[in-house]
Length: 204
Image (cartoon, rainbow, N blue to C red; front, side, top):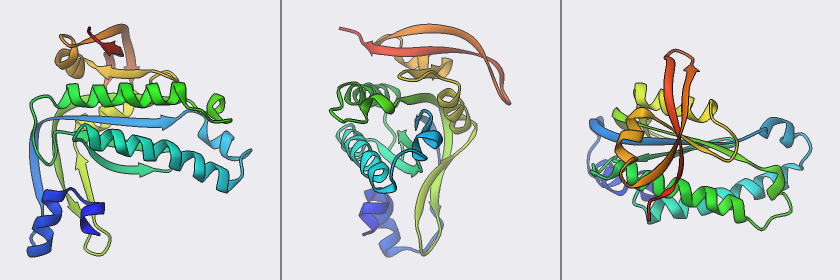
């Protein structure tokens, strides 16, 4: 059960230790994905159908995350959060997450569902140092914190439907291996003007 809730390495520690689990990681990438217009859509779709739709999408996302060796942090209603580079650091954290994001978007574009036209996602990615650890004793949760997480969330909320927006920090890590389209400077609440790019595809 622990292994289904927490990263394998974290679960192994918790089975034999009650100490607080908290670490700092210097190089991590964070992705937020969210359904555009979820609230109005949820008022027109039966509860069972909506849960079935989200479950189908996020089950696919979960498989992509596993295939790329990433860590799903949580789902938040219609939102989905993934981290790369925790709890096991990896030098290609941004590239691995970018590849996964492109696969997720490709799935949504080819998704064979009667509701496919009604559901669009925005995605945002940012990179930087974060804190990570386990919260709770009865209902465990592995989470990450820090300004890079907040900026990743802003990359999603200030993005456009059907696109993956990335920050400059992530752009610098991806520019050699991926094609990115410069969006320009946009105002980000709490951060001011920030340059952003859209992730297009992997370079051939």
